[in-house]
Length: 112
Image (cartoon, rainbow, N blue to C red):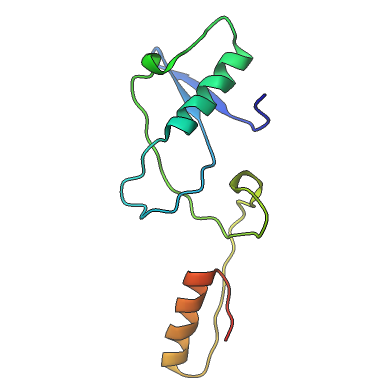
């Protein structure tokens, strides 16, 4: 049974359904919908509205996007906070700043 909230928005005779939380470890240039994501949403819809019985062939189109989340050890994507966070890195020299920024972007946290 699906435990996460999803949305279903009717518009112009169609229904937009979403969303999923999938860890995406590729370059976010052209993200694609995975079969698992598609099946997750179909299972959710069919579980809530069993008389509808949608299948993959009923899908007319779809889109995917990537939302950056701050990694939290041991948590799946659906449990990670969506609140905005700003990090400030203050260091003495310009080359240290670049090194710190690189470490933060690589590891998600500062550290020497």
